Image 1 (tube, rainbow, N blue to C red):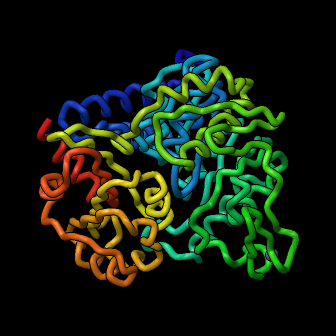
Image 2: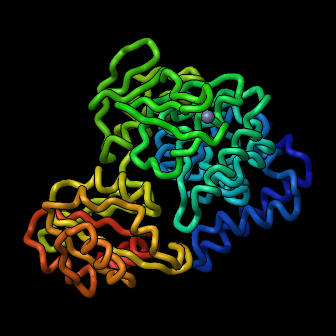
Length: 410
Ligand SMILES: [Zn+2]
């Protein structure tokens, strides 16, 4: 549907939504995408559906990696034409509404969706493809909430005329996705197992052995993936190996790229056409950003939850590593999750710690018998390490603090 054909109320709501977003930006209150979308939806509750109509849409959801996978998928679909996307991570309906209003008419859209809102956003946008990445606890959420989320996803995909692209290595995702009629499985990996030892179908124990998993009590087991990662290559359903050279670090980002290619393939994009575009994707909202400062090459890795920490250890190079932890509202106030993460991959590296809750981290590292140095600020960490590389792994607000500091100095 072109904008001219929108119902009057939707047209008005779109225009107000854009104006509000612009005003909010002008007032220096963020990028305005949430407030703009919120006002637009107040005027026309169906605005998201109206703006989605006529576009071919892919949704991307999961606990970790959705911002990056959304960016990679949007880059891949760019082969076909213009793509609207909520690249700033405003991943609830207000953010989607604002992103589509701002983009104007585009034939395609790729939207990152907060996992709680997947059903609602599917209802409003009738996507062609939905990518389900992973489910694990986010800060305070425990395994029980993970099972509940899997159940919500299952209800969302059941009996719908959509193509699901799902992670074959995450039992909770597989259980949810297999309720859908059409599923493409991607072997995206699962480094974090602690939220999926219990089968969501029958409550029995899930066994794992050399990359395969199965339930000991029912037929839930790892499906055969059509797409997989093989070292530095992505293998497509025909068995063809495609060499990938990403600017984003780690195996997890090659897996995210495999998901992006699998989604794009359902829109008719060939991997060979998409890959050069994926190689252009750099840091996302400062994540993975590399900054030069005082002769040091600093790389920032954001780790929001236990699964994210394990991935970050994998991505970080063997170099001095600064860990920074806060426990403010957006991080979750409880730091007991530190005991869910195995810090032993850091053994043998020089480890520095900082942040509001550095002492909690200190106790945790003691338990893991990893030597560390406490520094009062990240700048002191910078001064303490020799020139060369410094890896920084931080949780949400600690990451924002460091970003702000770097921007100020710039
Ligand atoms: Zn079972």
